[in-house]
Picture 1 (cartoon, one colour):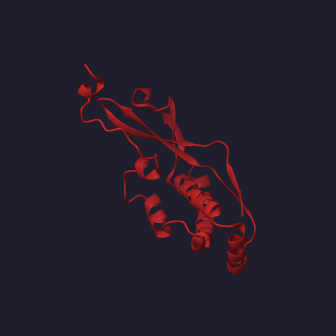
Picture 2: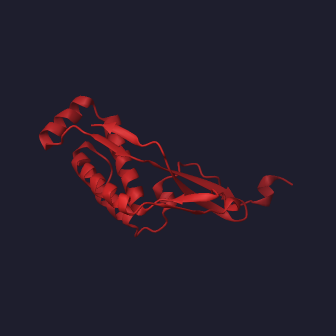
Picture 3: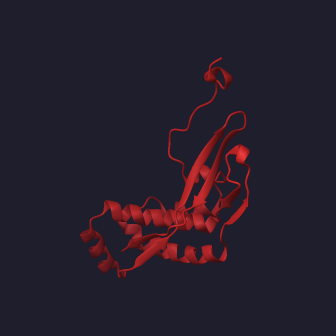
Length: 154
């Protein structure tokens, strides 16, 4: 018997795992904040930095927790569950990373000067998402907080 015969409706996931996969509730605080921000662009850099500062403080007050996981469903024995604030910080930090990667240093410096943004180091922890397909049970998404903080020189 072939594998496809056992699970004929199985479709492998071909896109990267993201916060949108991890959080199913569209009314989540994460989506409300990210929705207000919209796609990352240099013009939004000041707002992104401002929100990142606010949510870093909130994330420190409300950190994620490790809980017993179910390895049979692909979870770690001690599965990390980030708080919504940690997810927001990660996503905003990744937006800043993206802006830095696609924009020339000269344009960033001109924008910083025009908008009164001081040179600074932005530090955040990225949340990495992964999925596990458990045949007969479904697809499960998990998050992990990177221990090594990302430092961006802006």
